[in-house]
Image (cartoon, rainbow, N blue to C red; front, side, top):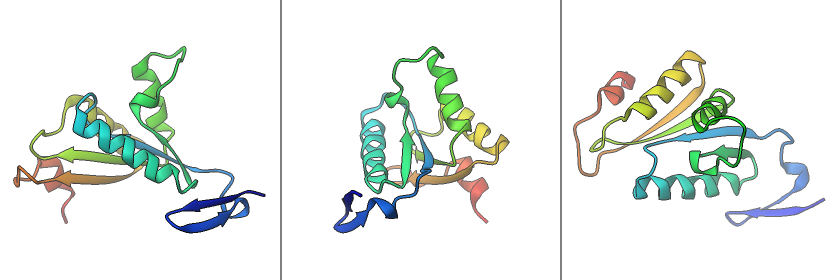
Amino acid sequence: MGIYQSRGTLYSSADIPEQKIKVFISSIYGVKKYDKVRADLKSAIESTQLADVYVFESNGASTLSAGSHYAWALEDSDICIFLIDNADGIKPGVQAEIGTVKKHNIKSLYYFCDETQKEKTPLEQSLMP
């Protein structure tokens, strides 16, 4: 039995579920600020040992095309986290992922950054009660 520590709390391997939550992180790809946040968020979530996180850049060698691989990973996820900066808007790839989570009823968390652009995106407005 192993002992693990996350954020100052000790856990035994008996505390860790056998089947982990599958998390998909979606944002614009190839832009430094998003790449860093995705990597940091992936690390923080996986440090709990409760979830496995998929980010596009973690895609290793596969017989599937990159697009097929991440689409399959998204459809197989338990939850999707969207990172959206209002100043950048929603790019077509992220919009396609939003369509996929809606089609497959995948639970989603949306984080909107309004640091430089206060005007809400149409997506954010549509999510408001």
